[in-house]
Every structure is written in C-alpha cells, then in structure tokens.
Amino acid sequence: MTTPATEKNKLELILQDSEKVRLLPSGAIPAEDRVISILMACATAVPHYLRNLLKPLNISITKKSRVDCYIDPPFVHPVTGIWTKPHGLIVTKTGKKTWTALILARVGNQEIDTSHLQQIFEIAEENKIDAVLTFASLPPTEHEKIPGQIKHLHLSWMTVVNLTSLSINNIGDKLSDVQVFLLMELFRYFQDPDSQMLLPVNMGNAWRNVSVAIQNDLDLAKLNASVDTLMLNWNKLLPYLAFRLALFIGHEVHVHLSAQQKNHPERSAKENKANLIDSHQLHAQFNIP
Image (cartoon, rainbow, N blue to C red; front, side):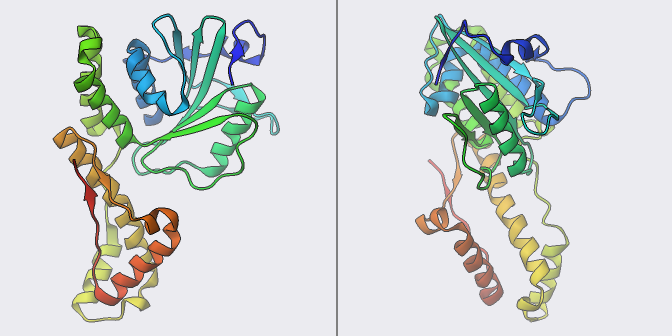
C-alpha cells in the first residue's frame, strides 16, 4: 500500500518533531537507537544497500527516490493514549508516491516483546504506515493478526551482516568510493562488541549444575529447572556462534534446522531436552558455504 505524497495525515506533524538518523550518534542513548541510527544513516546514503534490505517487500527505490530515516519518532497509541516511540521510521518518496515503515529492534540476546510489537502494528494502522520492520537475533514469537494491509519484515542481525558483506563484494562497481567506505565501516562496526548486536552467551550455573550431575551419575530428570535453563542458553549460544563465524569468514552462516525443527519447534525442543537427559549430549549443525 502506498499513499499519495500530498495526503495530509498525522504523520506530517510527527515528522516535524522527529530527529533524522545520524551516522555518529552522540550521548548516552540506548544500544538499539544507536545501531538503528548508524544502520539507517548508511542505508540512506547507499540506496542500493537499502533496496537489498527491503527487497522482500518489493519496494521501488530508484535514483530519483528521496529517502529519509528518523530515530525515535513520537507516536500516541490510538487506544491507550500513551506516548510510544518505535526505534525508527523510514519515509521514501518516489514521484507522487510515499512509502513508510516503522522499525522495532533488539540487540544482544534480547527478544522482541510480543505486546510491544502489537502496539507498533496498531500505531502503524492508525497512521497509515505501510510496513513494520523488526531487527533482532531471533524472530518475534507469534503475535496477534497484523491489522489492515500492513506488511511485516523481520531481519535477523545475521541477515543484515550478510547483506552488508554482499553489498560490498558484489555491487562495488555500482557504488562510489565514499559509499563503499561507509559500508565497510558499517561492517567493522558490526564486529565491534560495543555495537551489542549479539552478545556472548553465559551458560551460567545451569551448565555447572548439569555437568556436576553427569559426573556423579545423577538423574538429570530431577534437575528440571537447571536443564530447562541450560537448553535455553544453548539455543542462544548457537546463533551467537554462527554470527561470530560469519564475521570471521565473511560469508553467511546459519544454524542448520531440519524441517521438523522449523515446523514444530516446541516438539523439537522437547526431543532435544530428552536427548540431554538420556544420553548427556547436545548436538548442533551449521550451514557454511
């Protein structure tokens, strides 16, 4: 859904109170705001890169398109009346057509809160926003039905890193030296722990408790809480390992999931837990080009 650029709505007033993204954000700002500001500042300066990010949405971005990105745009929730700030807002104008998207992000090992995401959908519907973009290590859990014609695109940080690398290596002949430099610096920023895009996973006391129990030939079924915590941390560890490996080799790496793991994650989780209890083993595979 695209709306005529001349249409008057609440969004125009919100843009007046919004700050455009900055390549070098300053001050003590949340990690999500910082990474989205830097990412979208680079995407604004490199339209081909932005097209790659938004490709699943089939958005037309040409050389004549104007792209503006904002950080922390202030919206009022249509039901609660509470001020709510998504992490970003994209506004593209091509001719007389305008396309908009709200951004919600989580860095490190944090998951996107389902209720927060639903609020963003409702704000998008109220303000005639076309899409909602989510950035996080893991896709959001099931949420309520997306209202209206709003589209939802989730991009994992792994995907963002991979698209950045591909944009540098595969379309360098279409970019200026300055644009290539920006993307290379963006890629370096992803590698910096300060970006907090994906933090190391601490296996915690659960790992020690389970290890001691195995060494003493104890029944792991009696350590249900520790086993559950260990499995949760294990599932967080695998994407982190894939992420670090991808940064090291410069190619996309994914945790390999079988059809059953993709289609029935809860059943798969129970089987993995049972395998740990019965055989004292955890298994994982990675897809590496």
